[in-house]
Amino acid sequence: MKYLDLVRDVSQYNMFKKDVIKVVSLGLLSSLLLVGCGEAKKTADTQSAKTEIVKLDSISTNDFKNHIGDKNYIYVDTRNDSYYNGFREDGEKNGGHIKGAIQYTADWIGKVNKDKLAKFVEDKGIEKDKKIVVYDSNPENVSKVGSMLKKLGYNVFAYDKFGEYANESDAKLEKFKRYDQLLNPKIVKDLIDGKNPETLKNKDYMIFEVSWGPLDKAKDYKDGHIKGSYHFNTDWIENGPDWNISKPDVVKKNLEAAGIDKNKTVILYSNDQSAPFRVMFALKWAGVKDVRVLNGGLYAWKEAGYDLETKVNEPKKVADFGVKIPANPSIDIATPKEAYNMMKKDGLKLISIRSWKEHEGKTSGYDYIPKAGEPKGAVWGFAGSDAGHMQDYYDPDHTLRNPLEMVKLWKEQGIKEHDKGAFYCGTGWRAAVPWEMTQMLGLDSFVVYDGGWNMWQMDNSLPEQKSLSNDVKEPNSKNDWE
Image (cartoon, rainbow, N blue to C red):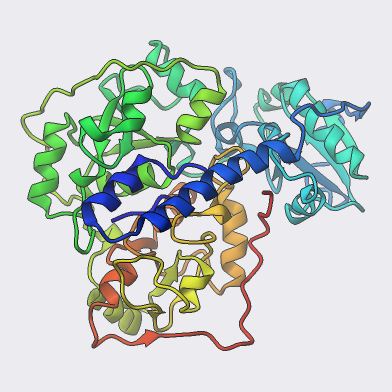
């Protein structure tokens, strides 16, 4: 059984799966649904999407270049995640961001609680004693974010000709090693429309809406999906009672039936971001070479104004997956004893992607997991308010948080970039989110311990941590915008 990790979208996945397993009460389900609805409304009401535009001082391209690396200046990137991460925007020669630039996407305007806005901006690392250069190729984005910062008391300079700089052959831009694993809606739409988006050259591609259950129970898919997309039932890659990835022959059979082989480009999306990342991990483990995720999922697609269809698309079965599964077993630690032995012999750090209440032993997080606690020696890696939420890992527009921000938080927890680390949660879903962040950054010493707390607590021979000392407090995730 899996809980969804996105703050607002406690979808039919939970509803149906809880019915099937019969372990979660209707009362708990109702409370989760109310939380999702209430939070969505609260965010919409707290800060007007209409930002008062104020006059900003602008700088030239030469001034923009000359102050890169100047400790008296902070650069703020207001573009969409894909372009910050590394994609080239509108055919520019170079993609990526200014080294050290802070990301404050214009899409967040109107989505941050007005009472928390000043602290949220401060937590991003934007300092009032510095000169703030807000940059983008879109003047409207610069005006929105720049005006917001100026009204908060920052010394703001506007640079809305970023395309000029990005087209220079010596532009000093940085990109994530695997930036292309996260796609924005425009890139996916261009692919569907027959254009040639950057890094998406394989015409043999499939788009999947990911949620639990067979097609006849896939409410999100039936209500409207991206044109040409198929439904992906998460049971195709995992099953209870441990909810580990299924046996290789089962996964092989199901992927072939879904039309997936190792050479397909597979693009995943959902109402819940944790669902496609879980499937992404499983497909990478199996051996699919090219797996992408639509950042922000169905919410982002709708926000972009793109159409949906209700036509049911059924994939054509492929004869053979094309490689023995798993082709990449090293990214997965399947059992708790394997994880425990690696902790003792190799210095593996088990990183808990569970709520603080789960980490301190006050709840197991799940009705079907009887024991609360953690594997002894586990390090907390941030998560959300409960087993169904991952607020620490998402931005106000539902997209994945900048992984560089999480790296800073992990360091404060004693997790270094080149450590041997294994993310885990209750049963594997939440853990796939930070794993993808490390994949984007090229930190390949991080894997997923798939068995999670669920399998660990089943083995009484393994050491457990039942509680934390009273002086240990929950670290600040620096992401409080609701």
